[in-house]
Length: 228
Length: 202
Image (cartoon, rainbow over all chains, first blue to last red; front, side):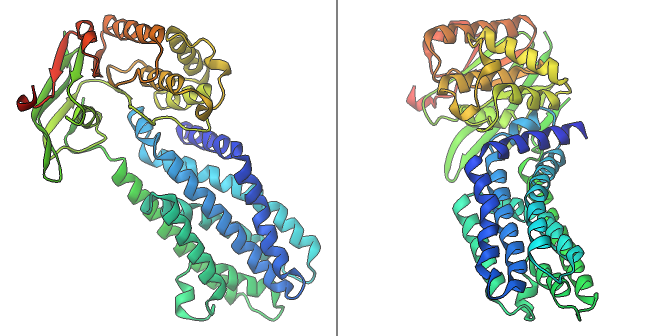
């Protein structure tokens, strides 16, 4: 646990020193929010969640790529593979929660007649899913440009696709639309929340499995090595 | 002296090009081995295979003890300070924060880098200072086998001499040290030399 927390602490320090990235992280979801605030406030809830999902995924993509240079050294220095990716995930989740909290407060006091607990749930799930999404992308696409293009595509599809269509269900942030329906529409039942939770759980499990598998393969002890 | 590192029958190909063909090495405690050879002859590849970072097409590596590795480039986090690197790598070896910091600073001072405690983040360090950090990290936690891939890149002359003194301190402390180098005039500082230059090119 100590090693995992040390990785998490250092990852937070690294992210904290990327001031330009932090400013963008903080402001981009705000732009998403106000883009729909005037004419369709209910969409601004969904958009701000997508904005946070996108920025956190991007931060995770860059953090994952930045770690590639030092992780082999850390493996040799006594870290287990899972300590490395779990430490980084913990750091990203902490940053994500710090980012999402002001947005929750913004919606809590700026928008009326919503189910605020459901909004808190969407934000928490968005942070929970977006960090491993970005790390999984960095594991599969080690070049940042490719990863960014995939992220852009996913968020654009998330905004444009009919959420009731099957293809939309395959997108990582579909749950935010489902739980968002419950948060905004007074008549909506808890079935929306149940479907959203199930979708988030499956998505999270898939991304965690991808991260664990990719890291285990990349940082494995090679079969030619025998260490006594 | 006891055997610390043994690589046997290592073969590595990149596509159709065979870089290492049935290469072997043995390094004992208290021994310095220099790996030399022309550019592209597989020096770094052999070291990465010995560190377990790269798989050979065939062959085996046996390590008796713990490993420390200093890559030719990379190996540090751009946005962490030297002290934070010491804590991060030291934690992997089971060292406390205080111990990791004091050991790291002491090792840095022995490489003529006395201000490691107040150094900025890694990306702001000069190339030579970053390599000093890399070298200090390789030796942190007293590993039994040190694999150093041209670690003196960017060193000034004084630091370069300090580097070899550090290698000899490790040697005296019973470490097995492998240094990839292209500086043939320094071979007298090594106990054993492994020349990877293909016979046809010698």
